[in-house]
Image 1 (cartoon, rainbow, N blue to C red):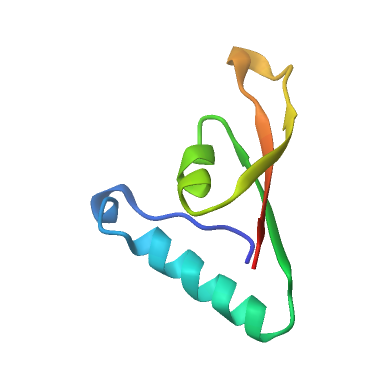
Image 2 (image 1 turned 30 degrees about the horizontal axis):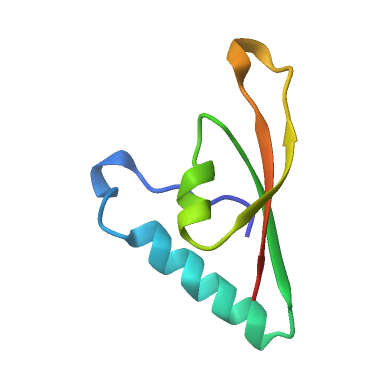
Amino acid sequence: MEVLWVQEAYRCQKIASRLLKEIEEQAKNAGCHIAHLTTYSFQAPFFYVKQGYAICGEIDGFPDDIKLYTLKKKL
């Protein structure tokens, strides 16, 4: 998957959680063992943490104190 984004009017309905779970299940069925992704601090790092991902990398130095996070999850 390239991008996971839910239009603001549809947020708080667990749409992203359900999509992510389905994608992880398909990856697991295809033989994948680990999922990894990147997200910026102004996006959704803590959404992914709530979904069982662990932050395993952080890059700072972007304007406005923005950070880039790398996260992973065992499938």
